[in-house]
Length: 208
Image (cartoon, rainbow, N blue to C red; front, side):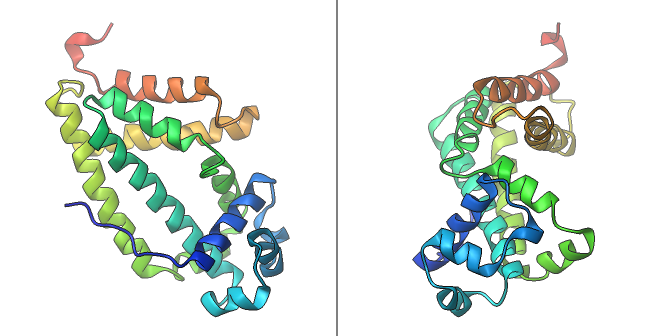
């Protein structure tokens, strides 16, 4: 059974959504203050401090909240779709809906965090990190099992290689959007990411 995320309060989710709004606007780590997040979230600064100790904790927990939303989307895709390609298409369609989760913008925000601060961010949410990692492993195994069951993954490929291909496509799409300034919601971005995964994993006999 897939492990579910802890339930966040409405105020915590508002804070995360406020941070996402700032990310959509192109704001970087150094330019964001707790007051900015509070204003974007529609709550008072004091209210945020009832739930978070600092800007860094908000960002850290928002990242794991975003990952949990992505995993939820992937799990939904696996329940509703029967082939690896369909699962990936459904997942990337949801991933690219920036109104729900600005994955590309959030990735760019995190990339703006100075290297010396990134470890500090990770230390804020050790339990979130451990839970999300376990859930990711479970979802990954289900996804690869689905692809192997339908014959879309070459039996000779290891799970580790398949994971590398999928993550490369996921984060490569984000990097491509940042470099080319294309919108993450561009359907062409999704098609290329899905096609890259399917071509890299398909059985050798089906490769042209």
